[in-house]
Length: 419
Image 1 (tube, rainbow, N blue to C red):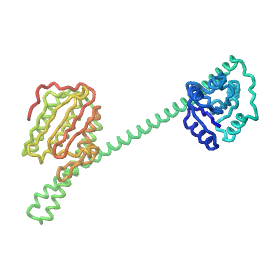
Image 2: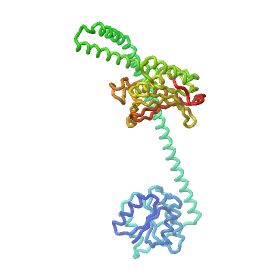
Image 3: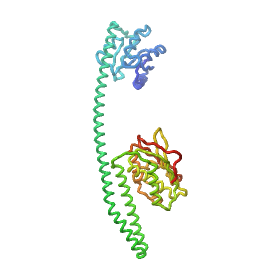
Image 4: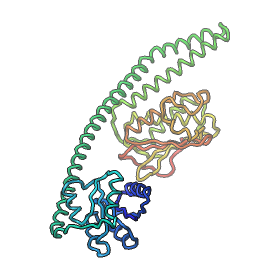
C-alpha cells in the first residue's frame, strides 16, 4: 500500500509518515493541492490523506479535481483536519467526494482502519450520488465565509488581548519610569547634599593639617611627619572628590539655557587657566578658530574643562606634549574633537571609560577621581548629543562629541591657531 500525504505543515506530514511507515505503509508527500496533482501524475498511489486548509489549492478543491479525473475517480480519499471541524464542514467534505472525514488528532488505529476498509477489494465501495455542483459551491462558499468569520473573531480577540497587554505594559513602563526618575532624583540630591555638606569640614581639615605640617616641620620625628603628610594628601583627594560630585550633580540638575557660543574662544580661555596653574609645563595646544555651537555655556565649560584637563594630565610624561581641538563633519553634523598625544589607553577597556569611579590608569601615575568623563557624558547627553573615544596606549587619545541637532557650525578658515 502507498499513501499520498497532503498537508502544508511539514511537521504534520513527517509525523504521519513516520506512523504509517511503522505499519509498513509506503508514503509520498505534497504541500498543497496543486503539488498533490503533480505528484499523482508521476506516482501511483493507493489512497490520499489530505488536510483541508492549505494555500494555492485547499483540500476541498483537491478532492473535486481528483473526482473529475477518470483515472483517479475511484481513488480512496480521506480528509484529516483540525481546522474544518463543524457539521457543515463534514457534509461539504463528503459532498466533494471524500470517502472519510476524520478530525485531528485521531488515534493511528482510526486512520489504519479507514485505509483498510477503503482499499480492501473484498468490500467494494459505493459512492452516493453527488449533489449538484451549485449546491457544493454554495456549501464551499459558506464554509469559506464561516472560516473567515471564525478567523476574524480570533483576530479580534487577539487584538483585544494585545491592546490590553499593551495598556498594561505601558502602565508598568510609566510606573517604572516614574520610580526610576524619583530614585535618580533622590540619588542626585543625596550626592549633592553629601558633597556640599562635606566641603566645609574637609576644607577645615585640609587647612589645619597644612598648618600642622608647617608647625611640626623639624620638630617631630620623620614617621610622624609622614603621617601628617598622608592626612593632608587624603584630605585633598577627598576635597577633589566632593568637588567632582558637585559638578556631576550640577550637570544633571542644572536648567539648560542654550545660546550661541564661540567654542574656540572658550577653549582658549580654559587652556590659559591650565597654563597659569601649571607654569612649568610646555604643551603645544592647537585650536581651530571660528567653532560656534548652540549650547548651555556653563555646562559646556564644565565638559571642556574636564576633557582639556585630562589631555593636560595624560601628556605629563610626554616630551613634546601636544593637544588639538578641532571639528570634522560626520553625516552633515559638526563633530568636535579633543585630541592629545599622551598616555592613551587600551580600547579593550573603553566600555568602562564613562562609568563613574572607573579608572584606566593607576592613581599613582595619573591622579584623579574617575568622575570627570562621567560628567562630560552626562552634559553631552543632556544636549542631545553623543561622545566617543579612540586611543592607543602610548600614542594618545581623541574624544569626539556632537551636541545634537542645532545651529552648530565652523566659521573658521585655515588650520587654526597655536596658543
